[in-house]
Image (cartoon, rainbow, N blue to C red; front, side):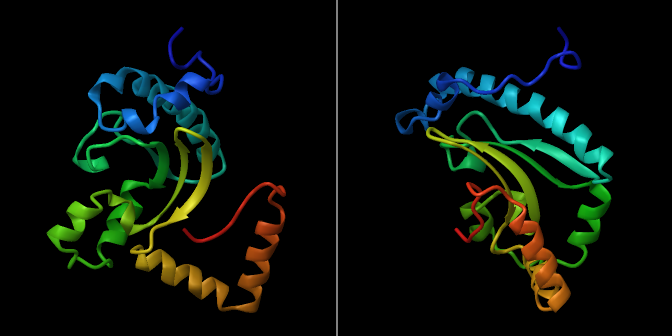
Length: 173
């Protein structure tokens, strides 16, 4: 089947095992991690279609499945994430700080420090789906605080969070 005909069928225990701590820095386990990445890609295509149908213009990304500079030479997590489209990203880049040092970039090279993103992650012991806001994403943080500073915004946020099932968590990491 081609990818358009395939459906995401979930993860297996072997998928999670590909991210065991003793495998993080080894290229020997890239193939099993690649299989997980392929599953996340398929899931991302399906979710992307649903997000687009809901009017959200987001771009799908996948993290590296092999040790690299971007993951500090260890693969402890495989990510699927959605971020702003190119037009929105360009608008954001016109207003964010350009004073990020090379040392700060090397310490946290992901471009996700700039903004909020929707993501799915697979680690050795769990699967996580969430909306994440990096502590350095000051534009989105300021916008969220602006929403939460109004009574109507606070009520709306509480309503949205109140609709989550009991086993969902909301918090700061």
